[in-house]
Image (tube, rainbow, N blue to C red; front, side):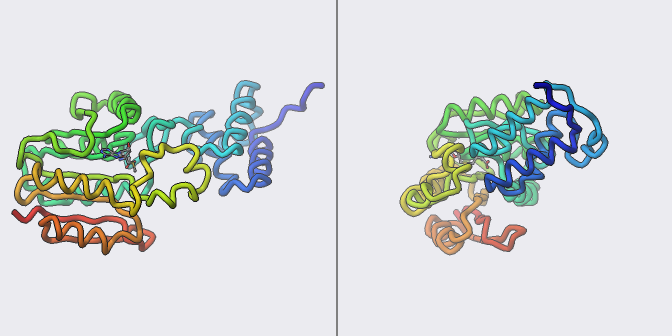
Length: 289
Ligand SMILES: C[S@@+](CC[C@H](N)C(=O)[O-])C[C@H]1O[C@@H](n2cnc3c(N)ncnc32)[C@H](O)[C@@H]1O
């Protein structure tokens, strides 16, 4: 039986209905992202193509994408790329999908005295994942030494691919490391990190598109969610210069605990700041000795 050719408008409407029946949030937007990717345009430019009758290659690809999302896969992994600040990065199961709130963490580092007053700062991103933070910093800062660390060889492979993709491979070094204790004492100007911060017992209850697809290593922060912060701070007091800065993304209920931890490890000018949704999301401090 031959199918009546459908316009892109009709295909998107069908995909939308299919995903809505499976309770996928933002079904229409998801279909538009998939279609925009196939048409190699922005989502808002799709209206230029809505009356086109796509060829079977595009129709099949769109259907496959819709089915993968319906089966629980994050749309970002289906698309295979995602925007973070001004960079378009490759994303896949090897690392966490960069989140919009992490973009603001980069702003804190860019505005910091450690970066603004140091001619060639050494900036280290612990738990670099896709490389989104350190690549953005290298992109926006003219001078500096930029290092991304991760315990996951898979994540590091993706980060290196992203460095090539963004033309920053000769400005950012990636290395496997548990924590960040391997730098010379008092040599680092900035430590930035979005570590795994979800308590272990909460991870299994996360939405399935996160729990079943994003790496557990990127999510699980140990029994109280603070294990990697403690590990990074232990190293930080050794490797940061006096006056060096630490910049963390945190869980929305971790503000008081992070404030206490930073002060306990000798940090001063400690701040806990909110994201655009009004939730505690960032903790920063300056090494006071
Ligand atoms: C929440 S993800 C953040 C990824 C990326 N920086 C971002 O913001 O999208 C945390 C990352 O930390 C890494 N990680 C977990 N424990 C670590 C440790 N002890 N030392 C270094 N990296 C670690 C994970 O492999 C994962 O890539």
